[in-house]
Amino acid sequence: MKRNSYPKVLHLLLVAFLILALLPGCAQKVDSSVKDNESKLSTTTNATTKTEPVQQSNDNTAKGNVVKVSLPIVPPLINENKTGAIVDLVKAMAAEYKDGEVTIDVYPMARSIENIISGTADCHCPYIKNHNVADSDNLFYYTTEEFGKVIFVLYSNKNVTGLTPENVMSGKYKVQIQPGHKEYLGDLPEATIESGLQMVDSGRIDGYIAAMSTCDQIIKAMQLKNIKRQYYDTFETAIIFKKTDDGKQKRDIFNTLIKKIKENGEYDRIMGELNSKEVFIPDAE
Image 1 (cartoon, rainbow, N blue to C red):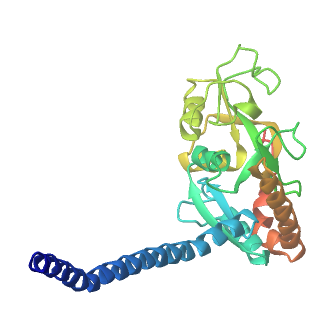
Image 2: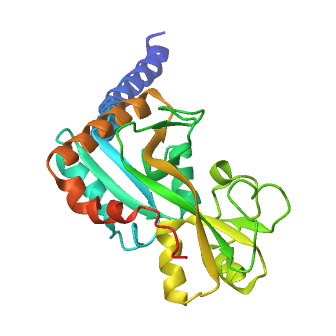
Image 3: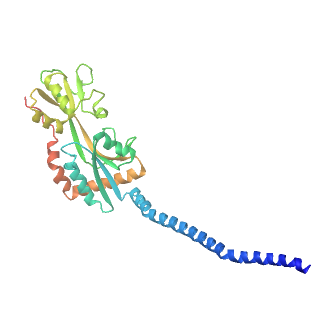
């Protein structure tokens, strides 16, 4: 019996020895696993911390600290290189905006207005204010402080008789209008300013309605001699904002800024000469 027990004892001792030999390796694997987990947690925390300033910046923008102004390219008031009287006017308002900053970008007219609808920008100017609008319509809030005006003129061929602002919609005459102004001028065919004036001068159409400040300069530059002018209508211009609570808040801010640049003389310095010319003078008989 005793002899048979020796192999069993030796076997148990061998097993115990193997267990003792393997224990340090298991401990190392456990430690390594813990360290890996600690490393992943640390990385996630750092990533979260890094994104916090971005979130704060977005919150500040929503509160109105940054106002993005979208301007349409309408030379010479707004040129593609961000020069012109309206650009200077916005810069003067920006200088008075002590609670944040104002950024300016220029775009084609339709894109600039779309920027407000899509939320890419906060405001667009100048925008023609229809006669039936007080401070808002279905899409926009409008500044209510007087900002500017635009005079529209009916340009007609000198050989055309009987065409007046009152009967342009009668269908009796071929009349076209400046693009993008059907809301104000009526549902008439559109033509670019240069094309419309040339067609009037040549007699291809009877009349063309467009903004006086631009057309009068083009008529002189192109030396068009066969055109006569009649006063059509005058509209106020405004700065428009998307019709949201944030838009209304920023509209109120810009009403205040317009008042400030009028009080400090910057408005008259920039717009005085232009506004003095925005007066319809009938053609000499």
